[in-house]
Length: 379
Image 1 (cartoon, rainbow, N blue to C red):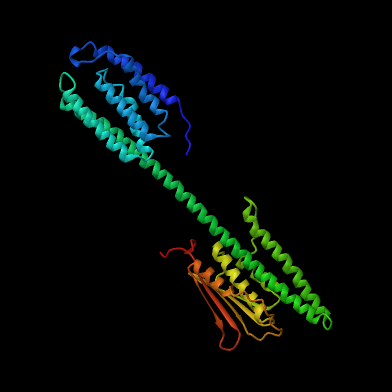
Image 2: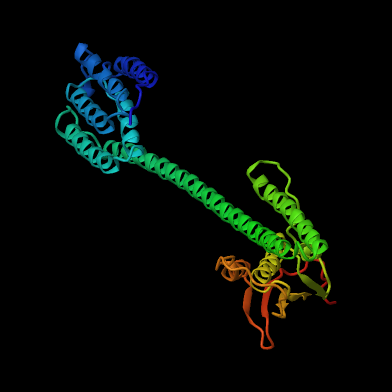
């Protein structure tokens, strides 16, 4: 990846190394026992090698590290003023760790430490003390430790951001799947209803025109409903767009009237508002069940029972199978009952479906309810 050269840091570090070394030289030359030599053009050049290498620290972090350490070592061997020259080295070691070259940074720092021990033992007039060696080791370890700390912190932040992006992607995928399921349910129910009613209207148009008019009215209402529901589902794609609350248990009576079937709705227990997921799932299960009756046993009598209990709501749909109209071939998708089971299972519930002993078909869904917040604890 291309990295542009940032000249600001090299200029600042070069300025500090040159002028701070000049200040250090003033005091170190006054002590002949230190054995320091005055700066020459070689010394100034070596002081600027490290800052120049910093300009390439992003493009070539290992090369910048090696060049800086070599220049610092040569500078020490020439006995110039001791101290400020290490500023560049701190930065390149830190940069090498942060850029992922941890082993190189640790090995090169260890090699430099051994060089300093040898230099302070055999190449200066007075052998350095144990305190000097400990201070050099501490300076190198502190640089490496701080660099490792910031590297781990940056990796944790990057991992946190990655997890957040993955979670956002997962939620978006779940929302798309939910929308696809909603659209499937809306279209399957209403298109099946329109098909059945259109077939009925064509069949009785000549002999019973008034009944055909009723079927056409049902088709008109069903087409309006499917447009309204699709608009509500697709509005989720637009921020702040309101969604019509038509897919809920409170609208089962409207659903029964629009189905074109002879539906009896029975509600037992204390009727109350349900969580959005359970409310929508119960409605869709009833809708899919009525769609299946329209497909496979049109004209049958259907009973929808909703039983509210403290811990669950039970939805039961039964038809007598005694349809007065002919079932339309080619309408079954094969996904109705599995889809209903998936809805119930996703909420921690269950769904059973199968023929009734006396004829017809029965679907029963049990959807668990969260504990009611308005229930009072016993004294």
